[in-house]
Image 1 (tube, helix red, strand yellow):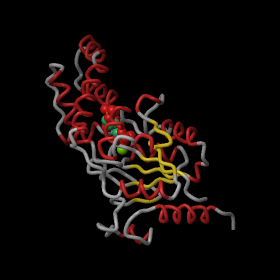
Image 2 (tube, helix red, strand yellow):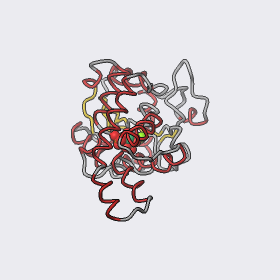
Image 3 (cartoon, rainbow, N blue to C red):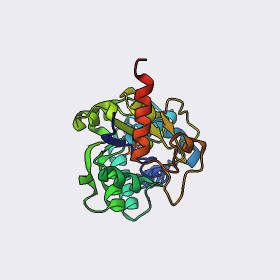
Amino acid sequence: MKLKALIFDVDGTLADTEEAHRRAFNEAFTAHGLDWNWSKPAYAQLLLTTGGKERIAVFLLSLALPEAQQAVLRSRIPDIHATKTRIYTQLVNDGEVVLREGVERLLEEAQRAGVALSIASTTTFANIEALLTTTLGAGALNRFAAIGAGDQVQRKKPAPDVYEYVLKKLALPTAACAALEDSANGLRAAKAAGLFTIVTPSYWTRAEGFDAADLLLPSLGSPERPLSHPAAQLIRSTHLGVREINEQLEQREDAFRPA
Ligand code: XBP
Ligand code: MG
């Protein structure tokens, strides 16, 4: 079935954002008088928990504080996370985060080909708005037919909820859509929603498992900076575009067609 929509994950897929998130978490902790500081190795572990508020809660549990102290700190998580989001969006607006290789090209190519654009992310909507408008310009949000973010769904990735929410809004056959992800949690969510899933691991997720990925590439590549990676032979091209995704979808359909 021909490609009709792309569903992009945000953090790690559209842009390598997690270092900016890590900085924002640490600055928010300081602003709230907490002596917590997430090192890069600690954050890499904490990233296995999706959602910033959930991530703080998991970290808090690891401190094994007396229950009364934990309860007070737990009640402060929404405020701490709101401060973190304010700091993060400022970092993004200051240009601290850029789109990954090939992302802007694929977005433009898809729109020219009449392929709908959408987003399925665990991050907060304000973060998505800041990233898209800073990197793609003021009207960027309008280019997306559907945006699923953060607390809009009951269960965050690896649950499929945010992908199912976006698929419902798109009102397109799942087989005509492709998901783009960077993490094992995101891959699990997209596959649980029945989607063809392309994975381009980020710095933070490169050691995770991606056996279930339909296509695993180091990045989307570009004609200027071609993919020099065995997987490039899979797509018979030096970068991933709409043509290459269509070929993959057709190959997958052929593979499942009864003999
Ligand atoms: C990655 C996440 C988010 C971000 C932090 O989302 O798990 O929690 O790390 O953003 P994605 P928040 O699904 O886009 O990879 O603090 O707003 O949650
Ligand atoms: Mg991600």
